[in-house]
Length: 117
Length: 117
DNA sequence: CAGTATCCAAAGGGATACTG
DNA sequence: CAGTATCCCTTTGGATACTG
Image (cartoon, rainbow over all chains, first blue to last red; front, top):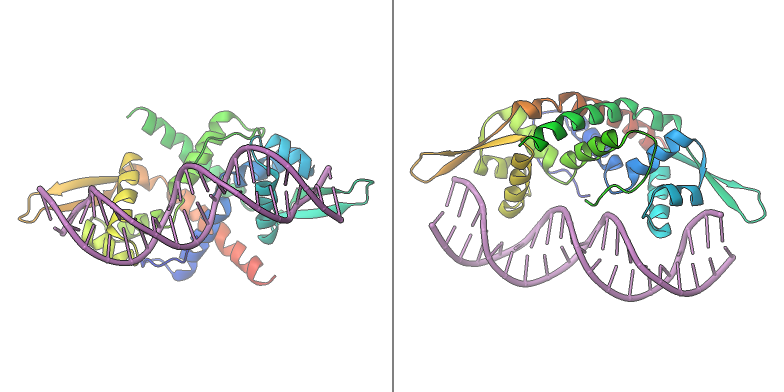
């Protein structure tokens, strides 16, 4: 997304961490995919494709690779006749729970304020 | 960023709230600008332009309008000889504190894990 | 000073078809 | 089934110059 160039006061480490965290959840499909995996457990490519309505295989493939690169999900190739692949959340992905909760809490309050404008 | 089309299990309200919250912090400059305002208090257009190194007036203008539309900042025109404009965080922006903290916490842990890969 | 106007490059994302 | 390949459109953001 581009390097961080501004100079606010907090430590550089915190700023980079903040940026990383936001980028990891940004984009049209990331949270959707993570949410599906969280609520349904292990899923195959096809399953995620169908539950994330509107996503195309190309985009899904890219998103899954990105999530795997960031250790948020595991990718397992199964020994089936036509090969299948299973995806599941890692323990590390579980650490996003407090983040998601905080985001939802703020988002709910925010929506109320914006709607009554 | 596009409508939410996936169908995970949580309530629709929470999903929209989550999406809103993430979008509000997404992009190359949002957190940077908010952080500057948080740590320096009221700032003028020129001040933000200089502390957010690399941003151009056009982009800054758009970002500030977006933040104002979302009630995160106030915009005040001052009665000075060459007109100046002051920006400041709203109380509502203060509600992002827990979100930011959670994001930083996860981001720090995430960076550690990724670096040692 | 605080923006706006124009032009432009790069990234994100969609439609469709194809492959191992 | 699980992707890739191509093509194309939209969005984001940068460079530069200009205005009230």
